[in-house]
Image (tube, rainbow, N blue to C red; front, side, top):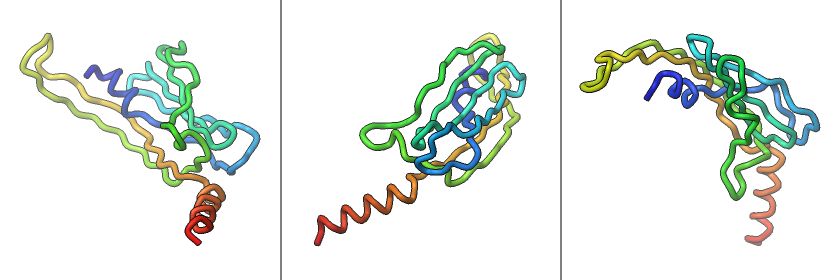
Amino acid sequence: MPTTAKNILNVLCTSSTLFCGAVTVSAIEQVKSPDGKVMVEFLMQTGGVPAYQVEYLGKPIVLESRLGLLPDFTHGFEIARISENEHQGEWTQNYGERKVVPDNYRELNVDLQKCRAKREKAENAKNAKEH
């Protein structure tokens, strides 16, 4: 996989503190590829909706897009943990123009969890159905 594509796949960013049900978009965080050509921005939209956008050489290549899976993994999130990592290495291929391929990237991993208020409401509804 080309280094630039790997940068996009391995890079996630995070926003600052999120309050469930907030009406404003929280601050945008960003991370750049080691060569500075690719930038990925991560933000939490209103209602705890995680989103991202990607730029290459300062031009948008992926417009602001929501992250999530249906049916109920699209909104109501808060940030649980953030970790950063930078990797510099290389790998060898048997075929192709280059035998040794650089493998350098930066990543910011964001662990999301459902907002506490929404989890408690879901648990209470589940308990009410059981009794």
